[in-house]
Length: 245
Ligand code: FPP
Image (cartoon, rainbow, N blue to C red; front, top):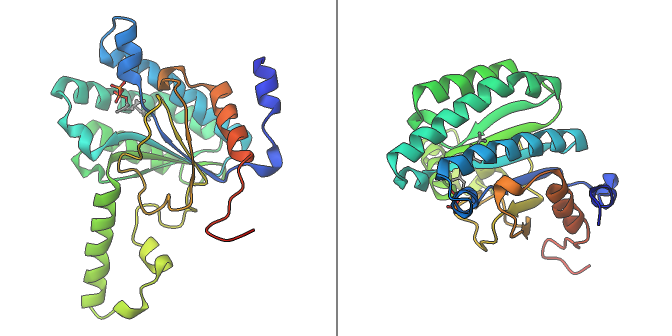
């Protein structure tokens, strides 16, 4: 099948509104080539650029990328430092491309633990792209689904104790408003690369009815064609949301 055939498989009238991606396999990609893990992350950034631009071109409303998890702090210090520098570099180099494609950048997770250079770059690019009306790009950084839920519980109990909210009135939509993804639709499609069948603490609340697509392709090899394959697969699914159709 040619890459043109794969592009044709995507039905523009049935696109997912929100795609979330667990970008896995950078280390394995590097190891297979006898390279350092960071070379895999560096190549992974090229996939980030390709996928972000293609999602915006397809008019996907929201794209959420799992860039650094809460658990990733347990990696070797030099790998963490290199990842943070790659992130900052990506933000600085990519801001014009984001603006040109109408993309608004934001983040989910507790970014206060990130190095100052990354926090500054995130703040600058978020501010600069704030009024963009195309796709919303969320970078999940120091992110954990469980931590996000705990933070929401802490905020909600504070509001309740101040008397501003009645606990018996808390429903799913009230709770969702205390999450980092406030105001955004839940992902329709969750893509995970490199074959692992896990959700790894990603968007635990939000993926309740998300369609999951796992591919053996490693993240540094995941480009436009693989994205089209994932979307085409999603478009073949029947979403029932627990109902009988
Ligand atoms: C998983 O591969 C990947 C990560 C932990 C980081 C993902 C980060 C990037 C693609 C670069 C930074 C992102 C942005 C948005 C600028 P792994 O190292 O766990 O791979 P392995 O399982 O093969 O070891």
